[in-house]
Image (cartoon, rainbow, N blue to C red; front, side):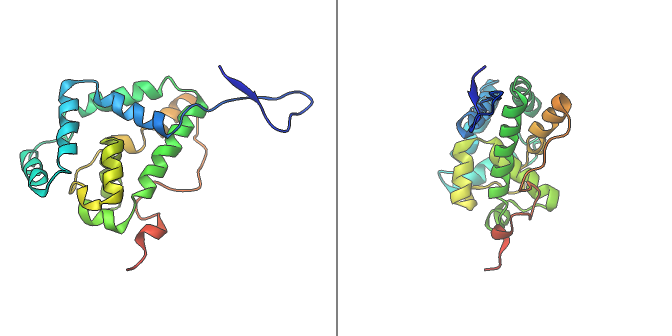
Length: 191
């Protein structure tokens, strides 16, 4: 375990564990889950392929129009994330949750909602799908919301880290933002 002194040091030389979780590692956890099965890998690649053209997006949406759950092997995908989170320290798990919350908050915007639709909870779950698809898809939707998929969701991802934290360490500390829909005031300002 890597330790560092806090600054300024007290006479008792308090030690603080370094938080290792960062945004790069956050996305690695997501990508590792996609690598769990060939079906998951293929599905993620199909979704990424929808960004190439509207025709590919339309064909994808038609192909999966009657499929539930939206993500094949979704339980395997979520379990793979859960298993990785279960190995983290309280500090790293909290850091993962804060990154997830920030990602969901940052795309809590009217321009994204236009392409995903969804009620309060539905829009949160649609944003969960955007994050679940990985960094490339997330960044694409963040920059060009029309890449988002209409009414596709991944509810299980939206609170996964807070649930693991509470199971392992008790109540999760409050943060300064909310992942809930319509809480990013700047994303919902009138045109």
